Length: 212
Image (cartoon, rainbow, N blue to C red; front, top):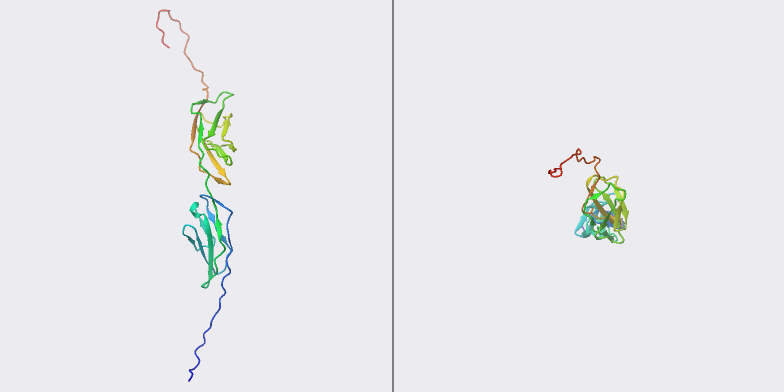
């Protein structure tokens, strides 16, 4: 004995999304934003996973600020209407460490900058041969030098103020910059424009007390 036919059931076969393509830059400087990319897929949801328990459902997530814990392998899975793609190929993110913070050394004695032959040398305590160093005058913001050398010689003093002047250095390597060095202060003085006045000429007896 057979029953009557049941109501019709319609089955829709949905396509599985293609494996997503993901990309990023060759490397990132420590502290800079990490940007991950994939193509826009209409109607898709995005599921990113990575190091240090990273997870995001944005199409193009940004990790900021970055640190060395963010270095490693990232993958992406997408879904459309409940159907999931296979995971993307592994994407390796590389973090370039921040260069060591420079430290300036130099003379600590006051310097008279009014003479034509006045000069002063400032040096680094921790110079690295492959790094570039940018030197700055703090009060004016002027860039003084951009060099691999561990010392600079200052012979022109037009931008400097009478009194304490601060200097700092930033190291760069592979496009990544260090923190600015601690300020190094140097006292620079100019000869006063007013001529010293000892007073009027005076005459005294040879046995008198003389006060100036």
